[in-house]
Length: 324
Image (cartoon, rainbow, N blue to C red; front, side, top):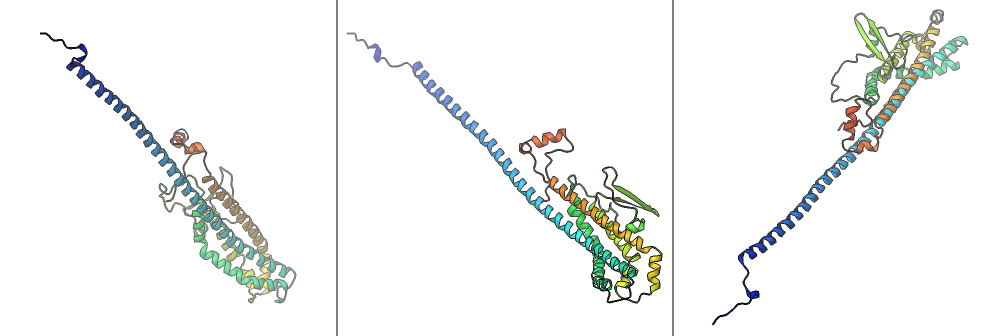
């Protein structure tokens, strides 16, 4: 007796089973690879996104520090400018007022009359003038250094304290100006772009005065004030203090034309103060330029460095060096 098995009930062969298993494994591998590639893309994007976010966060922090430093520098510059201009102007104005009272008191023939208006004014001005002269003489070096730091250095866009390590190269001082015979009548400021310095030499000593330096203006003004104070104002000071002063001394003062020389020096002193103020205001504007905002393109990664490669000077994207 024979029996037959239906074709549909035949057991699957081992080859067919292996083929189905491989297809499932391959499908799983492909799906896994696609998901991994997607996740890998997300990781790369996330990484670059983090870098860009960190860059702009750091840029924002830098710009905030620049703004704070700009405000600090501008405040220091304007305060120093006002303090210095006021100190110099006060001393020179009192000097001029004393001479005015002396000159007109003598011309009105009331120099000996202590009740005359000119004598009373001079007596009231004498002590403030002497105090102003003493204060200027005492504080001039500190005042000059403040001007150097807060005006000269702060307005110099190319100055980098990290690389500028030379000291003692600027020899100027009120005593050194005297040593090289600085002439208060002839050696006046000049501001031409290619002609703003003078060189004074005497006895092996040499000094360069740069009229583009507010500090140099301050020291030369103080030096010339002291020359006038000690040389031409002696007779005026004695008269103003109502000390014993003979008519012969007053006559000798005018006969030697000291009144004309003194008036000329006082006029020059006013011009010198005005020149200092012009230079000081110019340097304050220089500080504004130093912290002037750059364009948006300078904030893009790599742009500032690329411009620097092709523009070694006057780079509009040059960063401000922070002190902290």
